[in-house]
Structure formats: structure tokens, C-alpha cells
Length: 334
Image 1 (cartoon, helix red, strand yellow):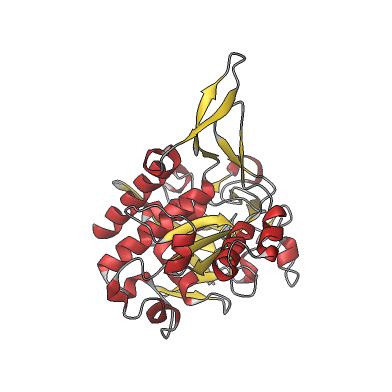
Image 2 (cartoon, rainbow, N blue to C red):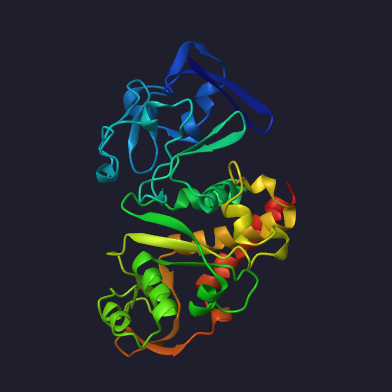
């Protein structure tokens, strides 16, 4: 079987024929093909060493389209014991795209796999309805695709979970345009849920707090807060009811609907806000510096922590809002 890809750039088109795992069919290399930097799976070609269209840079690893294999082992190998660490696309390149980098975790703690077949999404069984909605929503706009791709850290995983109104309030989410989501380390997220269930005075909750690793640390050199590099698991929580009343019983309509929860199945207004919420929280996962407090510069050039910065004045929050607004506009204009 063969893959046929049509690439377009302004007025110029190039038709490229490939074998199943991405290697070009030399006898069908049409004029203009060499002018394009990207090829199979939309990844950048690395033609200097292995020849034209034989090697692709996926970011974390180099892929050889002649072998259909990666040139280095998967850093997530412990999560996929059933596959070779060099295996690409679970040996199903027609149906599966290997999204390099960050892993979306399903209900069983394993990676979610998805593909688009004949214009319809197909998901592995461990993808619940909210995870399906998140993935289809992120892929519905250019901005969403960018940040789904930006979550590229081979040793990090993210789980998409439903967030109740009470949980949103317990997270101290400030009133704003998109107040239906949070992004946090999995350990801190689970601790906050325990506080909501048992109360902060519960001895077990207090003991758990003492064992929590610091999620952010103030950097005296930059005056910003850095995320703890030891934290590898994150949660994006989304409150469906907080998006709009048109969803008919809130989360029930999405989480227990039949078939794939595709963002295209919902009203434009709901989809627009859901996408903006998902994108905003995904931006937070990719951010590395956070301005929670004012930085006070000392005589020796270092910084100390000053007064807290109000939510609406935090640079990292405003950056995420701008990206969310852009994604919402993109979806509206589609």
C-alpha cells in the first residue's frame, strides 16, 4: 500500500508518492518535491546524511522511513512493554500518527492512541469522552495543534479529567473569561481533591501536604518562579458546566454520549469556549516561567520575593489568555 500526499505552498504544488512507512517512491518523484522542507507526517526532512526523504526529524527522535523504525529508543519504553522501543506508529502507519513528545494518559494510566480514518476520529479504549473531546478540540484549530505539539517532553504525561464546580472553587480559580479549567501537577491536583472531600483539618490531608514536592520555586537569578523539574505527571481539569448551559445536564451529555465525543458534534458557542479553555490550560503545561510575585532586585543583582501579583496582571496568565482568544477566533472563522 502507498501513501499519497499533496503539499501546497501559495501558488506552487508538489505531488509526492510514498510507500507505507514514508519512504518516497523514486520513480514517482515529481518536479518541485525537493523544494519542500517537510514531508511524511508533516515532519522536517533530514536529507544530508541518509538521502532524500529517508530521514525525518520528529523532535525527540530521528525516524528512518526506509526501515519504518526510530533510530533511538523510546523514552516512554516502560509504558509500552508490548512494543519494541524502536517501533514506529505501533506498526500501523496507515491508521496511527506517532505524535512525538508529551503523552495523553487514559483511564488505565497508559497512553491514549488516536487516528483519523476517513475524516473520523478513532481512539484507543482507554480514552474517555472528555479526553476524546480534548483531543478533537485541540486539533480543531491551528493554535490548538501548535500547543498540542509543543507539549513535547518525552518524560512528561498529562491526564484530562472532569472538574466539578466545587473543585474549580477549591482551586481558587479567579473570575475571568475562561474559568472552566485548571492545569496542575497530578500530586497537587489529587491533594486538592482530598481537601475538598475531607477538609484541610483532616490529619491525613495535612500529612499528605507535608509530603508534597514544591511545584514552583522562586529563581533568585531571574526573579520568576520555575516549575519543579522533578514533576513529570500533570492534570488538565475541565469543568463542563462552567462552559455553558446548552450542554444538557453538563458533563453527562459528553461523558456518556454514544460514539466518539468529537468537538464538531457540539454547538459552535460551546465548542469555541471549550477549545479556548483546553488551549489555555495546555499553554500553562508548556510554560516554564511564572510571575506569581513581584521580584525585588537586590544590590548584588539577585532577586527576592515581593508582594503577590494580582491574577489579572500576571504575564504568564495573560499570554495564555491571548493564545486562547486566538484559538477561539480561529474556530469561529472556520
